[in-house]
Length: 173
Image 1 (cartoon, rainbow, N blue to C red):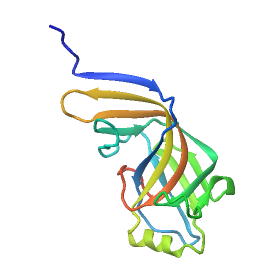
Image 2 (tube, rainbow, N blue to C red; image 1 turned 180 degrees about the horizontal axis):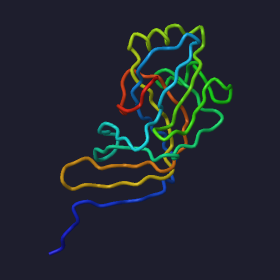
Image 3 (cartoon, rainbow, N blue to C red; image 1 turned 30 degrees about the vertical axis):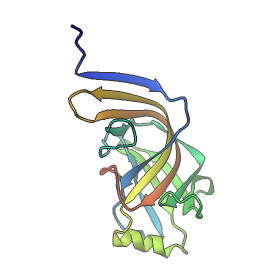
């Protein structure tokens, strides 16, 4: 009789480029200079249970796992057909590695009072990232609990201000 372990662990390099999005929570008010900042990606913190794969899982990001390029943009609700609110190449969107997570700083356009008002009122409650995972580690459980995924290397493509959050530890401050 063959026995199987309770948990299995898998490490892989992701070959196929598949854009993934994750929603983080956003809290706070827009500053007088129309800037916002906060944690776009909390490190070593789990997401809510995600269901975009064959089995449910919780995800987290390892510190330093995200590569930020010169053309990362900030949108509302992942609407790439709209004008970006900010962009790294323009200097209106910046990222900084910190112990707690990948911190972002953005200057909202003065003309987008609708976005500033939605943040202030609490209508927009999260930040979501679009990324391509290049390496990750999985632990699959057989006890009915969700699997876990740790993203160890990924390319950040975009951030979006959204209505709901998958990472409760992502904050706007």
